[in-house]
Length: 236
Image 1: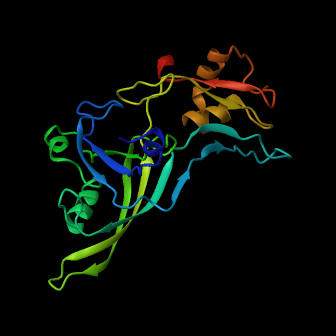
Image 2: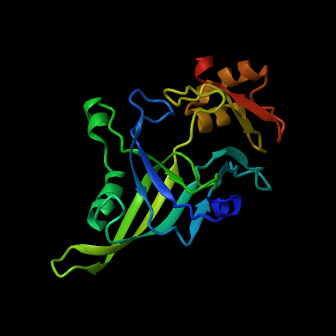
């Protein structure tokens, strides 16, 4: 009979799960389609995440403007997976590499539904939470290093890169992903409502919409450092 210590010391294998893409959009995947259970856990995982900032420059400004946060970038997970011989389910190295490559091509059901999408994937390794998230397969790079006398691959080293899919956020339509919340712009020296409208909305004539939204009367008198709300779809 196994004790608590033996349960804690038991090897947990990492797994790459493959889910059907959502049939009607949204952020919830379909059912589990398949999985690749790793014979050897990765020796290294590389997790990256970034933030996007925009810095608006004005030729007449003596100093650089304060950057504006424009969004959080997705997590990106990279790993190297070793495939060696047949797995416990009897699948060859070639079959398992092919399964990974399928994650970069749309599923037949998504094509039939006229919403082409590759499977969604999730990396799982015990209770390692920060590396376990719904993602898409950005890249699979397989290097075959051993072959049978008949030419069948017996070993492959696969470099895999996953990118987080993410989900709906506050002020976002969970089905379409369209933003409905208003954005803001930090005023810098030399800014005017027409110049902001041109840069942010594509038309200087839209300055009246910005003025109306912010209760401003003089389009040329703006205080550097102030936040100006920009019209969203709900203001149209």
